[in-house]
Amino acid sequence: MKERIGGGLTSALLSGEGRDQLPQPAHPVRNEPATSGLSASRRWLALGIVSVSLLITTIDATVLNVALPTLVRDLGATSTDLQWIVDAFVLVFAGLLLVGGSIADRFGRKWIFVAGLAVFGSCSLWAALSPSVGMLIAARAGMGVGGALIMPATLALITSIYTDPRERRLAFGIWSATTGAGAVLGPIIGGLLLAHFSWGSIFLINVPVAAIALSLTAPFVPNSRNPNIGRPDLLGSLLSMAGLTLLLWALIEAPIDGWSSGQVIGAGIGGAVVLAGFALWESRTRHPMLRLSFFRSRSFSVAAISVAMVMFALFGALFVLTQYLQFDLAYSALQTGLLLLPAAGTLVVVASLSSFIDRAIGSRLTVGGGLLFIAGGLLQMSSASMSTTYGGIVLGLVLVGIGVGLVIPSVTSAMMSSLPGEHTGVGAATSSAFLQVGSAFGVAVIGSLLSTRYQNHMAASLVHVHLPPGIESTILGSVGGALSAAATLGGPAGQLLAGLGRSAFVSAVDLSFVVGAAVTVLAALVAFLALPRRPAVDVPRTPETDDR
Image 1 (cartoon, rainbow, N blue to C red):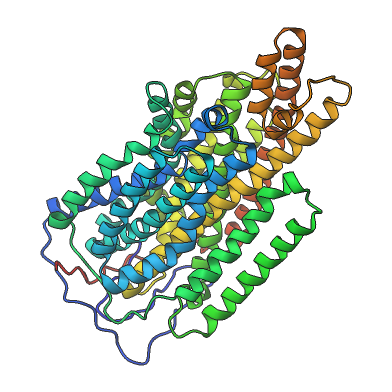
Image 2: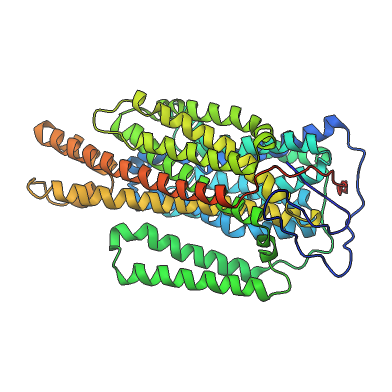
């Protein structure tokens, strides 16, 4: 991982084909005084603090997946409700990341990190105590605000603390492993908690972790900032969130209102128009939160696309897979979490080796090959049928873990090495924003395909089945609703309904995995064509850490 944190604004030169140079300012930019004497123990302690904080935010993006069947039973949530509960966190997270990175650069990355921990911890408590679906969605959105302040600050702090290229590669490997592992470990931790406590415990566990991180950050994590950063781009943030919300609303609500619904089409077109306006505003404003100049680097652009597609596939797959293991294979929440260990363990091991693989064979093969591993894993799992057991999908889990472990560290390095040192907060936020946007659209698109295929398949199967009045909407709302209705009916009628529900759901699962694999293959082709063939050369950075 090749980073340059400088006292002045320097361009990042990328090795290989298609090197691009970021524009230079008319006058050099002066950063805060550097603290070059940080001991090794303090550097690694600071890394541990920010990594644990990052872990709870990334875990929280997926920890709810194993609780989805519980929310169907306890709160009466429909499939659409489940998508919004998951995506409310990710949407706000993605929409505010760029603002979070900008204000971290301006006011101090350490103190914005502290503010994020406080917001995240308090909203976690709110979520744990939520009595309804609407309240839970609102609390999850509040947690997204905290996450948007935490994540870019962690990456920017690591970039400023580690000035030696070798240490930085290792630190970024740990950061990347934490990011990817958190997404996969979420269901495992959620399952462990749900085995002994109510669903609120999956949020309540964040509170003591955030409190401990808060108490350790002030004395042990050094601060850094860019005093010459422009003011926060609030209009840009509003436009980006409005555009993303409209698009996600259209995708999530389409299975209910119909893909040809005027409201769905209008929201989708409106979202696209608003996002186009956002891009136009960012190209004109003097203080953009999304610096379009970053995308003049081909490596940066392709890396951003790659990380978004990885998270699209990973989060979409987890949203589907955790329900498949519980609803179709009848595993408990705890068993479901533990059955994801092959993916989590593989991801952590491969991510720790990814930087060495990247240096040996280059970003093109590392990222492109990793994306193909993910696609292969999803295709393997798409062959599931009513008779498939866990053994029939475990290979797919391992392949997905290998792919994610290869891609995330490599693309993180490619993106961050393209950036001037004083914009690491905004750059980190841009990287994280693509990660979160990919996650949000993965849940929305894959979830909507799942719902649409399930509802169509189920509606066709129920044409000749006589049901008690008033339960058809529950059955079509989710496979969990169908199984609950089947248990209530009992007897042959209940068994028939349960079989029809599982059959419709497996068909929907297979389609979801195939679509995820197709998207990942396209991303792999882009990576093979556009990323540099050889790894870039490490250039040490001048530290910019400021202990105030």
